[in-house]
Length: 194
Image (cartoon, rainbow, N blue to C red):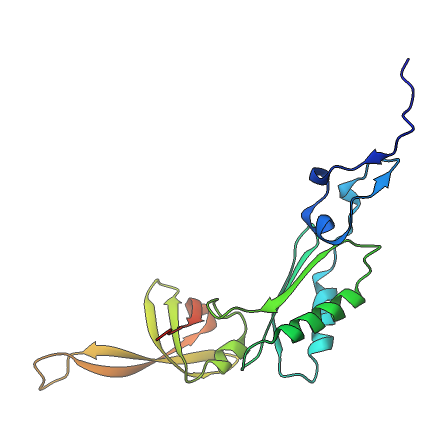
């Protein structure tokens, strides 16, 4: 006859999601924990908390992602770059607005990244006068200077060689292309390390 063990069950590290390991030590219990009891955090809740912190600041929200295992990623941006102190402050504000006892989570707050494609209109507006690279919906790559941007479309001035009447060789001409946001697969800044 088997008898019940009086030793508490210790959950193995392999049984706990990565987010739990980062935020809490392994707990001892008399029951086997269920990973299916983790409550998923609402993306809307995180977005509202972020926007509350961003109010009256020159930062803007680029993206919020919440995975099924409550890994939260928040991206912000600013026309002059993002300071680590502000990322920490936003992270604390979001964490204070969530209940760690009710929902375990992993939180990462950072900048959108200088080599990442633009996700929101404000990034296009901030890039006016800067060199960008884009891939059109039909697969053509272009590099030029962001000329203007608004909620509906943006324009890029692209230097191109064109045949000009009276000239034997093609001449470099600046051509302005206007795109709706659905006309492109991605647009990202060109980083020149020279």
